[in-house]
Amino acid sequence: MQLDGKPAHLTDFRGKVVVLNFWGSWCGPCVSEVPSLIALHQRITSRHGVVLGIAADDDPAKYESFLKDHGVNFPTYRDPGTNEDHRSPIALSYGSSMYPETYVIDRKGKIVRKIIGPQDWDSPEMTAYFDSILAQN
Image (cartoon, rainbow, N blue to C red; front, side, top):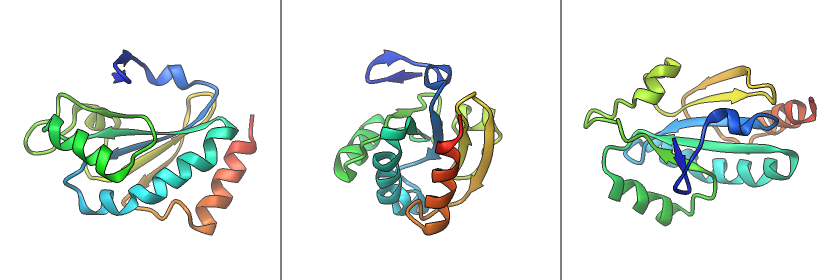
């Protein structure tokens, strides 16, 4: 994938806790959870965590407009293989077929949790969960 115009791979994030979120600007529940994903990213960055978004958007202009309009501050990538039915080859390779869907990947690159559907990433339960996983080496 490309991040900030440069080639990137998930393995580049080894050593960090990665919150890999599959979303789309056309997806109402995805839009609803963006503010709490932004807050989560701000909260975990200093502890070697990162939110990484993969967008299932077929229209690059709508995707870019969404990022700007919503102040998305975490790294995102628009899957260029996404078709007009919002099928993202990257999401499908993870077994994701609905949006939003999120994978938590530990520092060693192992998927430790799959979360289907929108979340309140600021909830006490999620805060406690991320405090726990970020404390692990």
